[in-house]
Length: 142
Length: 407
Image (cartoon, rainbow over all chains, first blue to last red; front, side, top):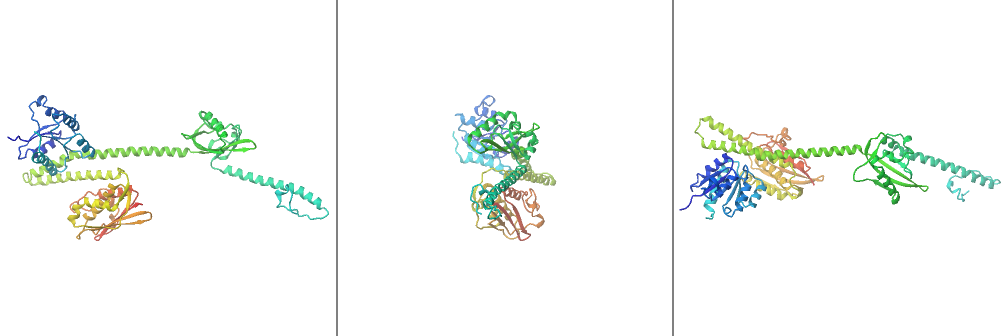
């Protein structure tokens, strides 16, 4: 039986989380979303530490760069350095448009980088395209 | 009688008028003695005039002139030196030059003079890593520039220092340096502000814009009639603020020398600008023609922005006819003059200079969109490169925006 797609959304902005979930949960694929709001929680979730012992391994991580404490860049480093985790695709979805952030993210091994659009319609379209691309078109490792 | 002896050579312009034959030999002797005395007197007079002239020259000189002998004692101290050192010549003559050198430099200066005398050079500008300093009679130190020369006077050496008090120039330089530092600090503050505006301001704004839009979509027709209208105003306001901040950022970035200036082919630049305006060009059916265009030294991305704003405006502010835009250039008085001419709605004479003000708009937002930053950006870019920008226009017929770039 085909498993339902699992996304780990890492974002400390509840307003953006709400918007993203609007789109992701509306998917006909039955995509499920888990949310964490800082980098340490993200790593704990992925490594199934402590309260995340029963956590599901996500098929995709959608990662904001600007997080309190451990920021998205540090999470990216940790995930891509860990042999157990580095095959999980990580899509950076963040407000920054700076070329430095974009270059750095790809250097650290991000699978993709998207800047959060300012316009609602474009924001929805961006999230929808992430979900559609990774779960309809791309092939994912088991 | 023609002068033949060497003693009379000096004054062979003088000829004795006497001509008596008997006393010819006596006459010659008298003439000889006479010409000696007159010659000396003439020579003395000429010397006196020459010395007076020289004295006047030295007295009238603006720079201080001080001559010292080989014992480094002052033998000449001109009027300018009296003023600069605040010391009458009477008190200075015979004094060692050291008197006018700050104590801590005296030893070094003495060495310098000795070495200079030994070099065989006759002149040298005195300089060093730090500005030279001298000492006035009242004890005040001051910065100065000086040259030194040496002359031989009957076996003895005479050193002449010509010196200028550069206090004013030094203070002006210090003031300029201070102002430059202030300016750099102010620019840094502005850049930080621009970064804050881009980053931190846009975030909460994005929330407002997104959720007012969401409200508008989800609750359209579900609340009382006024609610839709109010939400509509909120949405518009938020979106306008987003573009305003983006435009403000573009304006602040236009001022900064972000990129280096290279030779840019204007034809390629315009092609790039037209590429960015592709949608507007297609939608309006605009026709853009270019004459011969040069390559100029400029920041290429700013040049693209400049042409893009001008051509974009020409397209936007069209009248009933489809926009026809002509870009041309000519070389004039050592600069390039560019023109972007359109057949649009034109600009009334009273607004011709105000159009370049930031956020200045001539129409309502329902008539034409935009925040009124485009021309302000053009003006900033042109002026940053050392040029001028202006517009000629006939309302109802069209406008021609012209700007210059130094060649």
